[in-house]
Image (cartoon, rainbow, N blue to C red; front, side):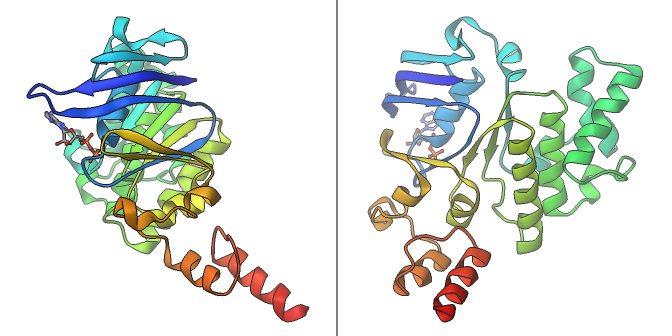
Length: 264
Ligand code: ADP
């Protein structure tokens, strides 16, 4: 469980980025949303100790982040940064994924098994000898996820995992996220992509100007007037609502509703 208790974060220069935020998060897919500058990244950086509370406390599986190192917390919380291409530095995909677990002390067959396992989950088996830089946008995103997974963190934070990806790549990243959930990881999606929220999230936390203004179900979230928070509801939901269908997650559900209606 990740527990945030009355967290305040004030940057040097006195910018108040988080104002008394409390939240807990476990084995689920939580979407952390809000306009630019609302405090999402600041909050996420508290989960692996990159930032420490100005006031309040953050506990990761019972460990107070005040007393823990980034290295220790990173074993529990993996953070997949935005624009993953900036993080690759090895000559091939195998070495890139092996880097983290090697640092954790894995070697030989165990290391090879671990890398193969992580690549299998993100559907990049067979890419071992490729240069990370030769991969497509979606493949790079999945490689970044594999690098984090190879360290077997319990929680995975994904920062804008679908931003800049075409539909096909975005779909493949979504499949990976679903798989991670099935494998028992707690997942936090930091995102502007409302389609992603609609399709995958089980819960939504909305930050606005450093304040947690909403924490609840996806259904309830899309009943808010999102324009107040510089966001828009997805096209699919807008069309569904205009047809009197209260809530659908994806096109298949939408079509089923229409078919049922035609059938009655
Ligand atoms: P988001 O991820 O939602 O875009 P951030 O957490 O990046 O929001 O930023 C929250 C607020 O904190 C913004 O006003 C931002 O300008 C400020 N901020 C972020 N990082 C720093 C920093 N290193 N120093 C000072 N202010 C910062």
